[in-house]
Amino acid sequence: MKKKPKKNFKTVDEVKENDLNPIKKKNNQIIPWIVFLFSISIVLISFVSVIFPALILVSGTTVIPGINPVTPDPFEPGVWSFGVVISGVITLGLAFLYFKQKLPNFLSVLFLKIFTFEISKKTAFVILLVLLIIYLSASSVELSSQESFEDYAGVKNRVDSWPPNKISSFEPHVKYFFLKASTVLFGNDRVIPLLASAALLIVTYFLTKTITQKRFAGIISVVILLQSNLFLVFDTTASYTNFWILFYVLSLYFVYKFWPLSPVSYLLSIPSKALTAVFLPMSIYFILRSDISRKQKIIIAGITTGIICAGGIASIGGFSTTSGTNEEFDAKEFWMGFTSFSYQLRFDGLVILFMIPLMVGLFLVSRSGIKHGESIMVFLAGMLLIAPILTGFTNQTNQPYRFVPLVVFFAIGVGVLLSKRPA
Image 1: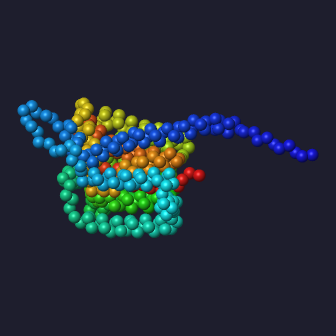
Image 2: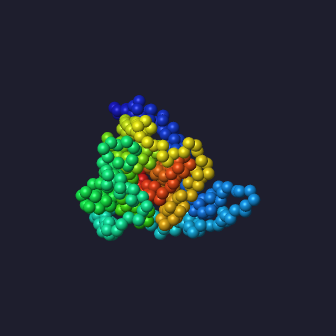
Image 3: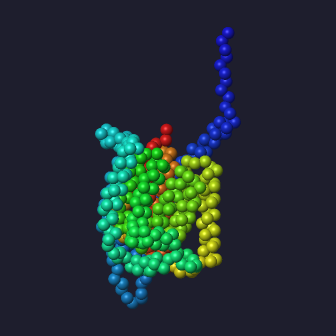
């Protein structure tokens, strides 16, 4: 007698998973759209001053009765205007033809090889080592020169008198600690800042490699960061060190590699530069979209949020934080804050020319299942939004070094485009 085939009964978990699949699929389609529309809106507003440098400034000019103001033409194109339009049309056109399979065969093969290319651990190690040696050799020449930044005198005086008998103000004491250590150990307050910048390159590589699962993507991110004029201007300075960016990016890397250290690293970034406290929403989104267990997500997000909230309460109660704040929102200053991007990164042509195509590319890869395409869109939009928030809600001005994190996440974003595609 023939045996009757066994019925394949589904378990309760499988039934639940199948029942939820349509919802998950719908959410997976909606979330990238929401993130993209928000992020691209911030980017496009920021690019208004790239295309028409005077448009926002002129629109905010106060007209005095009886006086004919001398103002620039609001629609006069900027230096990067045509480059942005041309690069956008070409890049987005090629991307559209690629996904529609309308490209010539040799170009399709070339793109396929680029997106699937990978290198061995040994090759990645050698390339990264060579890049670091070249970088340190070239940048070490700057250590013998005197800083020209106006804030250096104040920072040097503060470091010379550090540590204080009692910490009574919310200052970047972690930054002062490392600058003091650099002076004591090396007789130069710029050595450890240089090493921190080199460490930022290494962390950028490992974070990109981790979220993309490709070593080649990590190397590309390091190369892009190394070519940035903004990064190279502030990599050895004692006035505007990269400690805060290093600890913050490291906190994101620890989310995957050793989650208990993630809140600790984030905590260290705040007394390096208090601005990282406002990065909290971006960190939470990164954590929630990470490929770790739900329990770990809840713990990391909860601890990180608790630390920031506790620090905020402590600073309000015990530290002097009144300097640099406004009593009310200034709409004019808020919109003028969007102009900072155009002139603070005017020497970073790669960022200017390919920011918009990158955002579109990140949206496309996020729809294909690469969740951190969304995360990087959030980081880029958030970094751009910080500038108008600072000018609109505080008396602070937008300094160029505050855009270094933007360049870091731009570099990581390019690496994310090369991510290993989900099966």
